[in-house]
Image 1 (cartoon, helix red, strand yellow):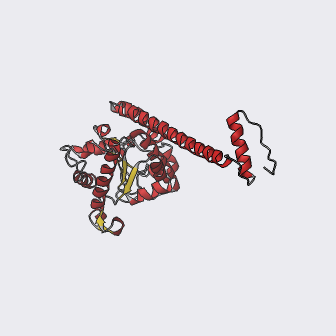
Image 2: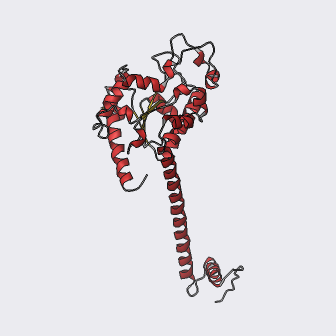
Length: 307
């Protein structure tokens, strides 16, 4: 060699060879087996990165599996309620705790359906004050909570007190591949909650959405996802979906590899009208198509041992 190169200190002979080879190559020289040694070292570094990535991925999957087993071990609604009530909003408004079908945790394909918002009586206004509502303050109200009791509303539906939104959703669920073979109501196998955690100002109308509604509703949804660990989340309200997207809840779903889709409200004309957004399908048809697609996808992945 006609040029002199200096090598920093090294801990062993192999390390010394590598540092010498890197120094030679970096100096624009090529001597003996230097390039081979550098290429071999680079390959080893790359393989080590892949191993570390796979190890990290494996640990995350193990943690996810442990969490799922912990949730699946819940045998009573009391235990589930204890977890839900650790969520601040449900501690203040326990009536709004999500509906969880009695067979939900037995399913290979877990579905969480999201409606839009609850309603209170026409002359009730205490929920119009966002700060009071989210602080749990109920001014001058004694018994007006029936409209926000999520579980009671669904239970009433199952016992014959029909509501268009739940009836239309149930009929659509029965047309899907996964739920069609079940004799019981699919609501015994799915979970349900309204996305917005404050009732709409006017009964029958959409809620006037404020930034605080977006922030808290999105946060509550992410907390519920951690508890229920669904495979898919179905937004049956464009207003709810847009707010969830704005509040980064959909980003959370993607990060957790939870599938999701949006469709129109089952109680509106759009449920049975064709929509360009759904490739000229109706809201009901789009709902069925998405659940069929995702159930096949999720069950195939589960059979191969993947999340």
